[in-house]
Length: 143
Image (cartoon, rainbow, N blue to C red; front, side, top):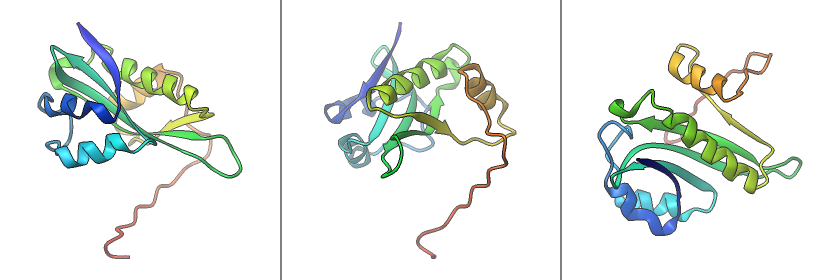
């Protein structure tokens, strides 16, 4: 049975046992500690037999003129656990947390060509804004 958990500062050990291809790179204990220690960073994980087989991460942030928002940063599910509903469960857990935090909206970016992601987000009620949005990236070590 796979369970979904929202990790906190005391859960560093949970992320030391991760299935292959869940994260882009091997996890590092010092980065886990920093991430989980930041109260605005959130991590939902899917755990099966004490091994993390999926995750979704988010950041909530506040503004001086509107409700807090929840930005879904990224997610990953081990290949042998994909297409089993874990992505939906992970996102729903983050959405519930966002509501608890008073967030008025959650949002995520993906490539239009990423059919799996666009289908997942649409199935959860996500919608594309009617205007074209453009994202710019800045390499801060060169700016």
